[in-house]
Length: 272
Image (cartoon, rainbow, N blue to C red; front, side, top):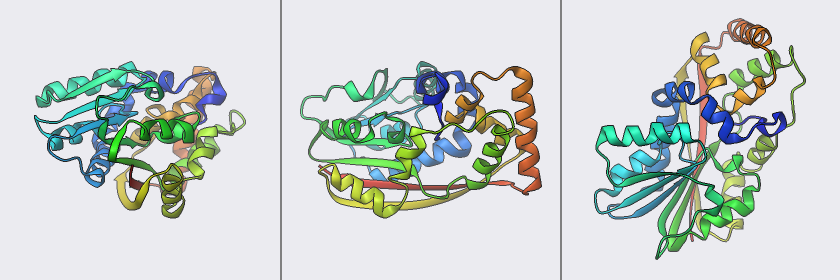
């Protein structure tokens, strides 16, 4: 989820750890379907070695682990310890012994001997402060012929929810500029995402769009605010201001008859 967390004095890891419970409530509604779509397009095969960058609560790492089977291995890497705890617990509940979760800076993660067959990153690359350089570092973790798979929000995704949130926030504070949003704007269409992947030195780039309609209630809509990167918008507001903002947000959703979240994603794949 995009959000101007760099402008509010908190880190991405702080934001997602603080909202980990709310984040995970959205797993079956949004994050897991997006993760499953990412893994389906990335197509990890039996016995392959996979890196899941910015893995969060395991939405794409777990389906990858199922796909590679006992002979394969998945490393999930993220900076949010709270989300990694959730991911590890989910893996234990499924009996998946071929996936390990690590709290580590993904930009400094070392390549295994021989490299990864697949590196995948679902809704994460635009959070990396230097998106180009950091993703190029992920590419270097691949073996020759290995694949990179990146899922991003498509232009126009979440528009009604986002507009209601922006309007509500602006009743309490100025809307901050977001470098995260600026990075996403560079890769939010099929053409620009494919061109960006090829600009990293990859070949055979292709992009698969997917759309989901997720039912919204006032409670779940607010849960997404506080359980994603947009939680940073509340940083520094006192409880009364947060409650006013929540009421204003809900009123705007109701006035606009917003009862669904318009989920549009693009998954781009390319070969090293």
